[in-house]
Length: 46
Image: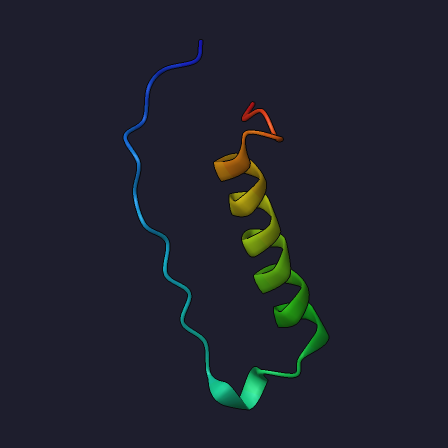
């Protein structure tokens, strides 16, 4: 059952030594892309 969740901010923090790690980069980009799509309304949350 869908329910209302108030807006909230998401912050990402990671060790700078892992900046170029492909797995961390993928996760960061996934989070960024998904939150942008949700804000634009082009992605419907499930």
